[in-house]
Image (tube, rainbow, N blue to C red; front, side, top):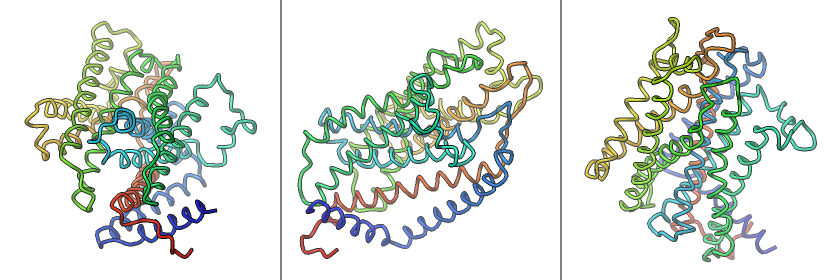
Length: 409
């Protein structure tokens, strides 16, 4: 009963905190709410008229939704780069950022699930994925593995920070014997969610563009580059607009993680390009379409030739120690790296896998306004959730939100 009382007090104090703030905070939340409403309106049109209002067809059946889903799985997995050094290796420099990273993982996973629901056409078909009720087809279907690992990782990233913050809210230290086993499990689980997603694509024999042994490792490398890059940008905003001060050495250590991952990702990209173009076969047509166009069709050229230079530029800037330690250069590099990997792991990976089709026909894909509206709405939802989680966590860590025994609930 006592813990329930404390929990009720935490909920009340959290609601009180997230509904108060500066004018900039209210404008930010208002803008996100407006974008979410626009996304809901677009989604209502999709629910009424079906997926025909999107740019997807029976020839290109995965588009903007699955592109974002694939990318965000990596962003969620990137939290492990803070969890492992903090909880397992006891590196205190990462301690300031780990709760922010896990909050970002929760927001990313919620967006992942939302994109899956949007791509399935509507929530009414979700019962197919419920064990014992629908056709779960476990363990034969890789999709069922993806459902398990995503929900499991979401559970870990909610329960571990919640336990720590719940203890801190009461003015107590969290017991390592309680959360460290879960933190260690989350390290392996984070790798698992991205590998399973990669295997989902690799297992489709009719899509040679994805039948690449490097797909899984490259998923991890790009995730550990883009995810921490986003975390650095978020930490920069937090330390500029809140009293929660992130030390320079914390950001510099995360920047080193981004740098190494970006370098590995670039090496793997070069390896993939060599494999596709040095001794091309008819299975290389998807790559030719992506990079050079095919039979006069070249819708993806602006995307990929924006992503590759940005990727190279960001990696080069991060590689030089003096440039990386200049925070203006670092933040710029993290931003363009994030954009580059979003393009490359989205349009540059998903769409070309369907082009050309099994009979050689080229059917290009362009997202519609409805798809873009729903996508922006889901991203706004993720930002909204993260803002709420971060504001509550920062309040508890600063001691502004704490349990008082005389609280009346």
